[in-house]
Length: 477
Image (cartoon, rainbow, N blue to C red; front, side, top):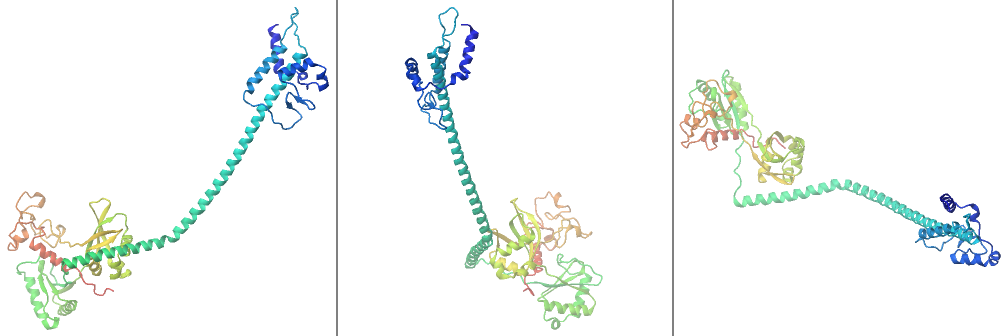
């Protein structure tokens, strides 16, 4: 048999003619052909009677349940195809080489193709079942996605309700927290205050407010607050004292004055015991009209608040200090607090995240802070508050009462450390000698510099500066 003939037969197997797909013979024809029935039984491909059958598959049913398991379907199909090929390619022994294709071979081909169809239907049925399962799984997945979407909606609604409740209760919680902090701070301060009183460590009382005035000749010049002189040799001061004796009488001014302090450049400072005495002295001297008279205004205390977190604006800091300190609210009203505190400047602190704040306050505010241990609460921390006094020291002549910018031309350059005729940055001496104490009868034999806090003239000057501070709140509600 030629190769082309085999290839044609092979194509005929995979693309069978329509005549090969006819239905099996009827039952009475099968009974008349026992040989054919035996061949069908041998292959197990016999069709079912009374219905249009191909093998065991009923082609008249729209839906059927194949009895063939999908396992090994492809192997069985290959085996059947090989049997069909053997049947159609069987050759006779004749010289012509014609193919012997009898009824038995036809039955084999017919029922083999029926079996192939049955196997393919079984495979498709399995695939359809798998597809049905996939559709069911997809439906279940969609149901779960819907449930998840509903759960997300519920979570969103719960979150919105929670945010609404938090927004409604935020102010109430903040107020309760503030009250708790105030109670805690009040208890802490009260305990510290009682302990200090029991140990006898209370600070000494502040000096009373000074009521001072300056008297000069009409053409005289003075420098307010300069160093008092040891000797009164100025002709101007002698003239002023003469006028004071003539114009002021003890009975007219309500008694003697507290002090009369000579000032540089010919003026004198009269310190009174009270504001009434100062007003009477002013009226008498202005009526005399031989000297110039002006009152010295007392300044409010300046304090330093240490360790304030950076970031506060001036209004925010003033507001927080008042709201977080119950003792302050008991000492002064809100309007008086805002009018009685002023932030002057901010200075660097050792901690780069914090700063020191200089504030000018009313005496009642300073008194309230001192009565509570010199501390004030800010952000749950007790911060130290201390009064700041500034004594002006000239870096050119080393004298008190002025700075280098306003130093008189006739003053000589003096080192504040050794009293030598050179500035401080050029001093090489290891011995300290205060030029002010040496100038005024050597008030202190102990070696010290002009800026030493133990210098007697520095202490005196510090006391003078302290008396300029207004420590009483007259007229303050």
